[in-house]
Image (cartoon, rainbow, N blue to C red):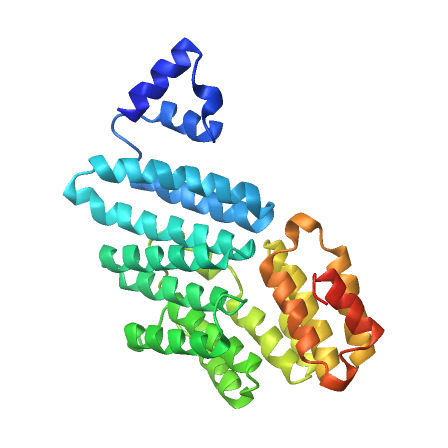
Length: 326
């Protein structure tokens, strides 16, 4: 009915200017009666993930929203046999949307979409996907959505669901645990979780969720995690070694945040002024459209590592000003 109305509006040339999203209109007009194949949907998820890594997040969020609209309509007319496949697509798109919202610091909305992604993954009966969604949710939640302590609770619940079965999802769960423990200065726990994740990656080939596999298996999660874990203890050499791989990753926010890990390691190792100056230079060099929540949160970790008596220094004040803090 909605598609017919839009086609009529387009033919008459009226009503379209009132639509909030012309791209959504185009998608509606282009829909075929039989809908898309699962393979087409999987390619769509992969393409959106690629765009999320390489383009300003505001535009990508709109594109994901368009696809969620299309998926809802397809689910409404799908046969019971197709619902399970579409639930996997729903979980992937909802995770991408939650990720995009988190990058934009829209945390409450992001948390709701992570819940939607979890529910869809569970309903799809794809165990690997369910663990993977929880691992990525926990990892993203650390950056201002939830406290590090709550993130650790999320990782424990996800590990229970994984039941020790190796997978890329479990790698992400362990990496989220390691980063949250590191932020809490629970360094032994952080190192232990990191070692477990590295052991999994270095072992037999790991299964990946059946939809959007590149979301998990090409994101260098252990190197990204090691870069932060070693930075929090001031081990500049091992942190630098870990992030060399991250610098080659396509996601601009991880490259920027990894550079900030270097500034954090310098501060944690006693180089307060040098580390703050480096963080300021890094933030200044990040294009506004690429200055995501993950990047700014990591810069705040640099500030948090500064001893309280030195947080009023001009260098600290400059970094706070760039981050919109007093």
